[in-house]
Length: 78
Image (tube, rainbow, N blue to C red; front, top):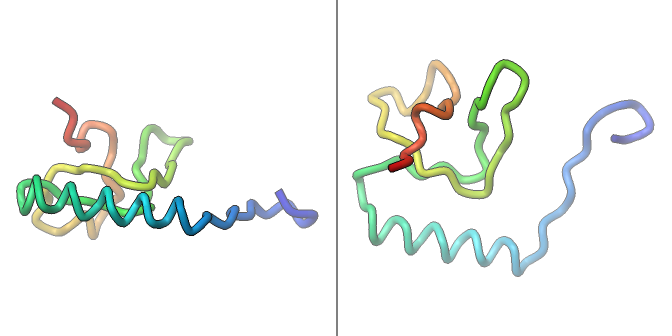
């Protein structure tokens, strides 16, 4: 937290960003249009937790989650 109480985001290294890009490319090649890939976007775990994972594999939604962030039950777990 900064001095004013605001959360600050750490910068990510070029290696980290490259790993995200390569992983996203691989997932898109393998999964195509079967799922929605979200990059560093919120996923609502509960009323108090909304992390922004590097990559989320999410079930498709006709509105592309325009009306809410995906939640845990909408992740593409098997």
